[in-house]
Amino acid sequence: MTTDQIAALCLALPGAREDLKWGSNRVFSVAGNKMFAILHFIGENLAFKVDSDLFLGYVDRPGIRPAPYLARAHWISMSAQRLPLSDDELRQLLTRSHQLVVRRLPKRLQPGLLL
Image (cartoon, rainbow, N blue to C red; front, side, top):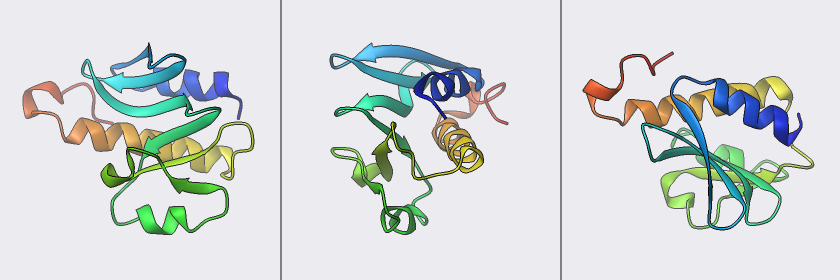
């Protein structure tokens, strides 16, 4: 999956938007400022949130590591040029990252954003 395909997937999720932050980071967020994925994170990396109980299992896989500055919130990071995941698995994880963030929003903001 290319970085443009990743961006298109993120933007296709309900309520998602893209902003440029911290120089050249493409940040995908929902409900204004709640990030769920970052492209070009500290170089050419992709970072996103995963379930807390699966975090250690993902960072044990080759090519996946805790995301700098965001690992305490259970974010993982990987090279966007050499993705260690299949397209289907990446699609599922990015969708799950979006849903993890949406579920932490106040109930009044969740309708229309949940899948």
